Length: 120
Image (tube, rainbow, N blue to C red; front, top):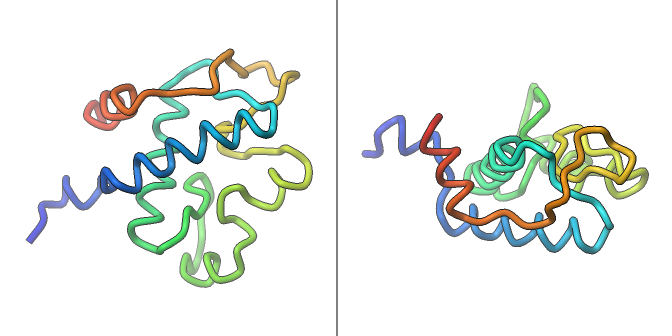
């Protein structure tokens, strides 16, 4: 049986998959991560945890009455429809040039994500 601490963290496999996806998507769309790397780390961790639990990277920054139904609908699976259509990322993971919270980075190391995750 896993401890509740272990259950609250994503698997390393999906964490790395979501890190790679986020970096690739930012570069492909000309968006950047938040100036505060802990925001990026928390969002990637949340995407990975949803991938573990639900089989899809459901947006971790929203409240859902029924997460399984939301995954099936696919609207909020990352990249969500607002991001794909208008480059609007509610999570502040993918920020456009004109966003005041945009940093300069399109990469984040697994070590940075682990450091934030371990501090929570």
